[in-house]
Image (cartoon, rainbow, N blue to C red; front, side, top):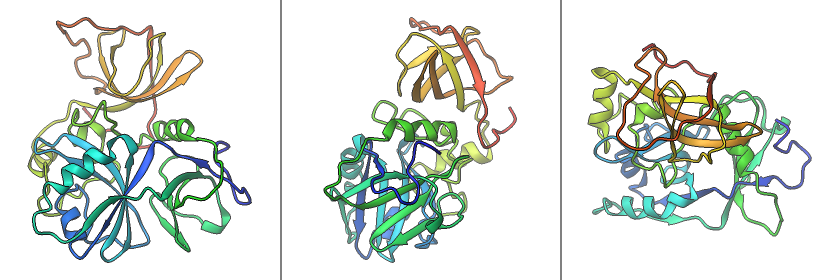
Amino acid sequence: MSDFPSDGTDVATTLSHLAVLAVDGPDSGRFLHGQLSNDLLTMTTEHARLAGYHNPQGRVISIMQIVRLAEASYWLILPDELLESVRERMLRFRLRSKFSLQHASDLGLFAWGESRSLGDAEPFALRAVGDTRFIRQAGAGIRWLQIRRRGNETALDGSLAWRGADIAAGQPQVYAATSESFVAQMLNLDLVGAIAFDKGCYTGQEVIARAHYRGRVKRRMQRFAVDTRLALAPGRHCHAPDGRRLDITDALATPTGYEVLAVANLPGSQTREPTQEAVDVVEAVHELPLPYALPAN
């Protein structure tokens, strides 16, 4: 992808919208395993994992990429604006577990493009070069998330391009405006490998498992091109001309409006959704493909 540097580039673009929580201590793995939706006990140091952090109602507080550095050492990569609230919330449940949970403010996150030295790899493959870690990202283009100690370099901020690539990849994310707004399946966490249905209990597990085995999720995150003069951002609600409601989870401005990820009724389900509140109706909504299939309605 042309937005991201390749081999031989001295400076990668920084990702200021992301940050790292460092978790260290003998009980760190078991604690995180009981808090997050993916299986952390079987993780290796060669693959990162995507996971959701949920409230007891199964609603997503945060989505993280998890790096296992060693047996009792992890990095949690999540939006910077959620870092402190997630940290405080997790520490409430520490009880007698022995671990530390700190903002790794000395670490920077950078966008890195196709790199021959990192080899061909599947999404979430993890590469270590000294103390630096690279995580292969999902999507059509080759891009890596680089995590390393900050230097004195002056890097351009590549957060908008990165979020645009996440939208194209159907990569779910929540921010402060959408935290605790959606259950896991509404954000397709079950479709992008962020939920282990065969692991033990974790916060929100009962609701998520019920939706998986017994329920029917009628609203899921989808990708759209939206023609509008409205300012769309995570947390904004709008209605398509046919009445279908779009709950925006991420948005990138385009010449005619926005490309968005939004939670909406699946195709073929009831489209007109009556509401008593004033609504913003956009000019046009065009469905765009995702790189993975949504379940049939």
